[in-house]
View 1 (cartoon, helix red, strand yellow):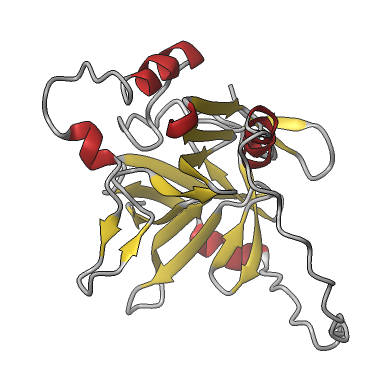
View 2: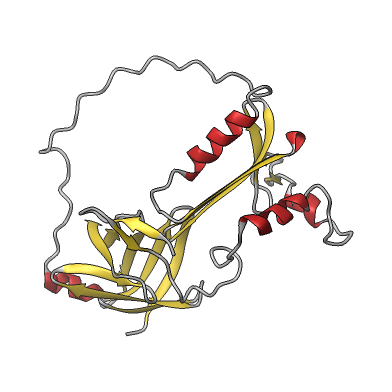
Length: 248
């Protein structure tokens, strides 16, 4: 079970029983399983193919520029040592993996709270165990002078749609990307998102046809030629552009 903080205090469940996609976001694991998975990068037992090498080969653009993304992994130096990293976030779950292959150290952080600082926790553990080989942190630069604050009069006020306007978004949306359905409804003047058996997620308008949850999820609704809402695009954490078509 995973949780997210409530704006009014306390926590609410934030997970789904209908997310049945295997792979990104649909893989359940344990520390023991991850230990075996990590060990395989040093002592490959998945056959004699090139999988392990290809997973750790940085990408190359058409113009020859190399970038740190490999096949599902990020590879770049951290304070003078080679690091292989990947982080994930879905619903209330937060995970971080940092591997330092030359030192044979891997840090896994598994959290079931959406506000958990998993990357900071992972970094702190690595800094502790690798303190004798890490380069010093760069000196902090003096803070730049702060610009004059924008007055409230200059800041655009968030939209406040009426209950009738919110009703235009209500309906069932099916995703061809992840083969699941979400339901959007209006209750007591608040737009809510229903995913599986989880508690309704309150959505707050941040722009025309755009809403956000307290945990950072964003929904952008789109309209067809008739002006009616017929689809939405969902983003959450490192996941962007998940399409949903309105069916009801």
